[in-house]
Image 1 (cartoon, rainbow, N blue to C red):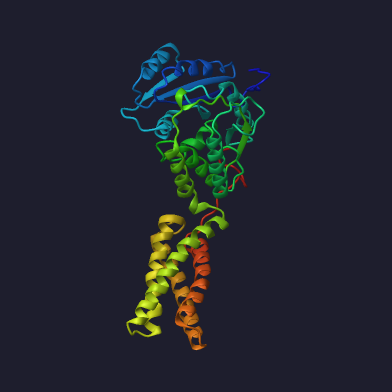
Image 2: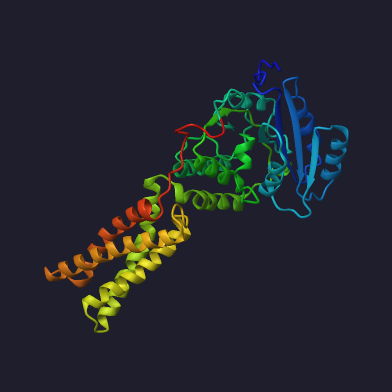
Length: 386
């Protein structure tokens, strides 16, 4: 296939390239047929298409148009949701049914040019990449000028995603992401709406596979023309970046998150210590009681917000490692607190300093002993998908 503007698809070493394109569709009656016709134009003797249109319970004529196209062209398969679930759910359905060597997404609107998919395929066909991402900002191609605040929000979300994944992408929220089929079908997609974008970036970063980025054109549309993403999707993206990345984020990011967890647990520790002390109990009693309660709070918050349960160990080993770490830090906390009080420090000051030392030891113990996991990031070793 030759195209002076958009590259070519060469003969694949395994034969003809079979390319699965998942088209999530919700109320796109004015564009879905044109979208499919433009997709079909990229076929050639070396590139066979499989087009999977996933209708997400459209209330207009989108489904009937899709069914007519499927009757007309054998490479089209139409899938239908009985209730509207969102873009992520539609993609999950399409990815499960894909049979091509490579898989991508094509929104049913006309914001992206399918001809550019041929360029994005080249690093995959040449076995240089496992995922290729089309960036709307890393490009000299045509780019429609639209909303400044959308651009600013997109840039912020991409920056935040990069901080958590240790990748240097320029466009995390882009539609065009081309995968080896084995890669995308190995990922459990949990998000039903536009949270798919930060989720999928997080999960491919965790796999530490080869990720490439190439510039593409962008023919964006306005809300009056049918654009659907909104503020609540941006808020959800923030949650997804944190939720899917925290347990594998780079060490500085994890330390920052643990700072808030540790600070809260330290406040609990000090408050209970002073409360028990004020009721007449001795330091010898107040210190371990406060520490045990704070350790439980710390563990629950770590499991819920930062680390993943049983990241490496089975349940018994994880519990044992946690008890060993807590016991060591508990003894350390006890002796430092008692020692400082004997040297004339106030009970509150002694406990605060011991808690600061405990914060650092707690984080290191949980990160490297209780919940040891490889951080996410770029490909660093042989890809299992090559």
